[in-house]
Length: 185
Image: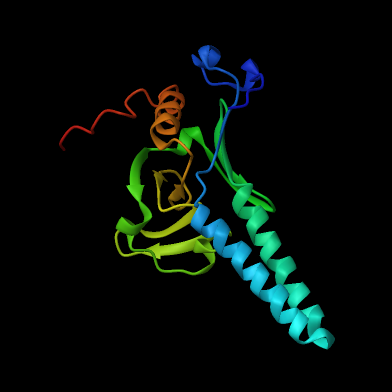
């Protein structure tokens, strides 16, 4: 985890006790990384079979390299004001004031529909359980963050329980009842 100083002037009331920015990488699936490597080797081999069309193989390998770099660069950062789910060439930011709920969940439980979000790109997906949601994930086990003006966000930090604990601690500086169940109406 990396840290840097938080500007106390921009922090919420009572947030002076917050630690510096908190960063955690995403959990990697070595099966996914192996698949990218095997696909690159296959494309390299196919490029040697047709040397006059090797440029196509090289182009596809470059595209794979970009997707793999995005996958490997996935990280999550908490500071005094926001949650940032980022990766190479993009990110999703949510102000802590907007977060109303965060729960551990499996992406499989959401039964998502959508291709772009599952291929290492921040993408919009749809679930019959929650409707539209964004995803910046690397594996199917993670955290669903909801609330605010945007759609929910699914993330997959290396240690979901530690991340959820730190997120909860920081959100409580804005919403003291964040972890408490809402009373019946």
